[in-house]
Length: 236
View 1 (spheres, rainbow, N blue to C red):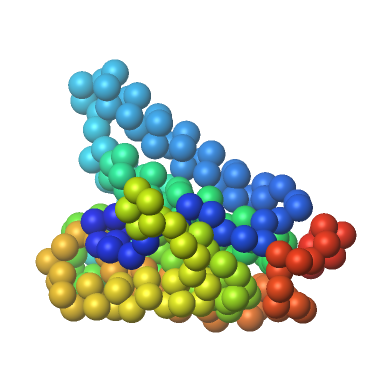
View 2: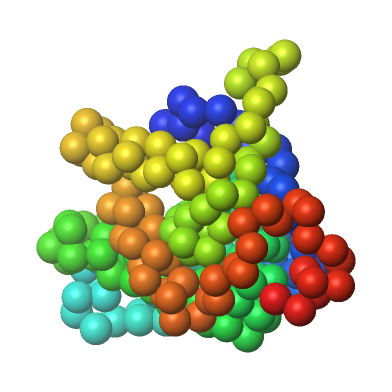
């Protein structure tokens, strides 16, 4: 879960908004919303249905992956969340950071990037627990960590508007904001070894995002993004 271990300012806006509709980001948001909403409805309507049923069928279980079973869950786990905060946290980060990365990469490349980052982050988690864990891994945070990794490569000087308390609003360069987040994930990996949050999947997703950004993305020509014209932004 993003929010249980997130003591840095909360992002609410990023500059360099695109002039093209981020269709893949919107589709990913809707797919996650529909699956999460359906889970809530079914859990309330059916006595014999719960989140556990979703985990059993769609989550990554490390022991299963090592034995070669249920490999499809390396993708489906990205669309299952444990609760409201888990869901909202992941979707907010996807909403804030996803559109600009999609615009840079293009729709097809961004979709492939999202899936590959998610798969690599899950495999890193499986490797860390040596395949012995029966605890399911769910949530889009691995792939979203990949988006953050790509963002720091493609848009490092972009400004992230954050809030830290009711009146404290200020800006961070994306490079420093995301690196602070990454350092915290690395620290938590060693500090909270018994927590259910899969910090290794965050780190692996971020690392894969950095690498894949050079494959799927394209560097911005100018640094002062907010001063570019709409016609220029539509060409990159």
